[in-house]
Image (cartoon, rainbow over all chains, first blue to last red; front, top):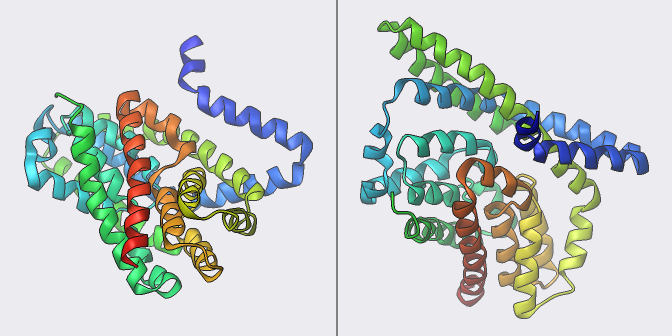
Length: 163
Length: 164
């Protein structure tokens, strides 16, 4: 029981906040629940895919095999794989944290994961829209700088992990 | 939003192909293990993510784009960059929502730096997802990554301001 509480502390807190707010402003909380459901349904397929992919990795890939490709010592190749993956992926990065944990357990470097999460801030699919709204100069420079940041972020975080 | 569904389906199909190719070669036991684990992971992730979606949605009800822009337009200079970065870190809606806000801010004479800081931490830091990052990737990783991202946001903002 105690471990369950600890394990789900965040979700229980959120539930409590929602219940308290619902007393004061039921209509706002109601429409928030509705829009959360919409977000969930929108991302449902991705959530299913992540669960399948994560367990596939847990079950089939031997420990440290991942480390050869995206381990701390995987060098430029590993960093580029991480940056590319982060750039191309969709949905919020936190949705992939359970997946990253499995990768870490199988030997993926902290530096690569940090780079991947950093590159997540680049939203390829939205770049055309960003250009129409913010202009091409702003958008392209902004995304180029994010890419550089993502790689530096990997070096920074990686420097503190021995592995 | 529909791009999420389309790209999600592409991702799912790729994963399923992986499953079929691997498990056609034999190992039925592993297939069973993987599907059991997937079901468990799917349920747990669903609850955790739904909770986050709820808190984000509640936040959206209170922090409308209008209110946020009006607030940010009160600041400029270096303070503007810091406030922009802090505000972006709290916002967690999809990135596409942030661009029109950025456009509005620029049209109302906000600096490129402030807008860059705000747009960058919007996607780069998610205060609400921090507990999730703690849980799955560890405290050390989370603290290092997010403090670096915050400092980078300020530097990136100044660079954008200088270059544009």
